[in-house]
Image 1: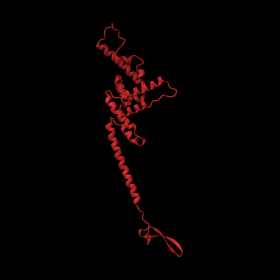
Image 2 (image 1 turned 135 degrees about the horizontal axis):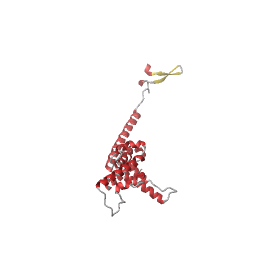
Image 3 (image 1 turned 90 degrees about the vertical axis):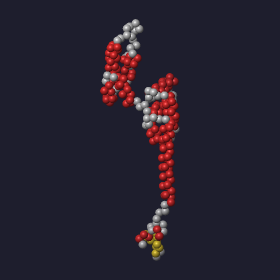
Image 4 (image 1 turned 135 degrees about the vertical axis):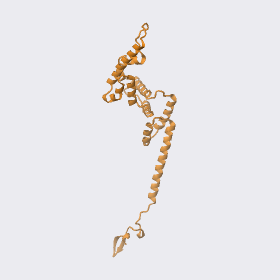
Length: 223
């Protein structure tokens, strides 16, 4: 969509100003600048509105004359800047490998695109310290085997992700698994110590009584 907006100098002039003004020209008045801005804003907003599908127009109808607000709204709807989204983006980056028929330059392009996606998923004031914490937490999560899939899914939904948060959930998971294992062991012990009734006349059940050379099955409880 950004390609459609930038196909003409509308978006560039909105962001960087009018670059075509010659040095010897007089600067426009404030009123002229405002009018020029509004004209370009409406054009850019129209470009954005026409570029999105019908199902997306509902998100931006209230910003029809404000392309910046439209852009931010669409970004908030479609670009999740939670740690889980960045985790998946980092995973995509580090699993890139050269295809058999791929040139090295094409490989470089894919890496650049993957890195751009990661940067786009970062909050505006994302720091190196936050990056270090996330990478440490993500390494712990990535090391989990398949039977911890439920724990991985829960961690991916957290609004913040660092080592301390992951370790707290690790402790809770281990405690739960220990309790479940103990419950299974108690049930197994109870099953092995259980002696079913019916073994012998004094305990009821069935047996055989011989009479006239024949063995007849009888129920001791009936006697």
